[in-house]
Image (cartoon, rainbow, N blue to C red; front, side):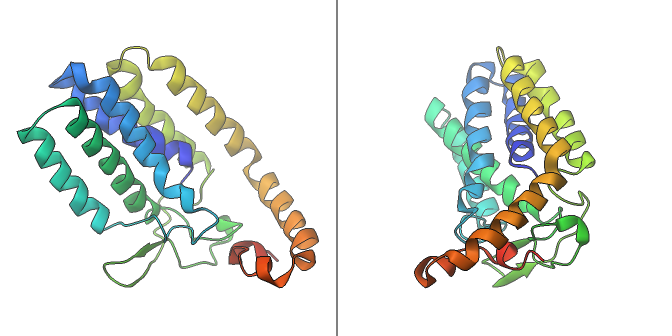
Length: 205
């Protein structure tokens, strides 16, 4: 799924804090959104493996939530929200497409790596690929709680949905562009750098 979808889903879940502790809702939504984005910082360094922990992150998030409930403060709530966002991200990746440049082709059986199981989890393709129309639908639905429950969040949510819409519109064209760039640039890279190029770009054809 899109990075923006991960952000909006995480923030949407955390915004429910407003129902029980409205004073913490803005910080919780912001921290969860950052947590939802965080795993994708590994996009060029072992993507969906280095910072993705579908099992371990969930356990850590549950422990942090328990701490936030028993010892409630701005810090414990924000930390719990961040970890919940990161855990949701890793879990959601298993519901999407495989790790490939053109995931709509359905050739990859690698969705997200589970360190607990010691193997890649297979994609379920409930959302066929990041940037699919249904991906935008999930993002739009997830945006509603944050927009309604968190004061001042509507402009930010609208901007994120705007970026998502542009990405969905251009998704397949961007894949073609990335493939052409890979074809042109990868053969010219020195060996010390070539091995760092993700396989999905090297095997773009």
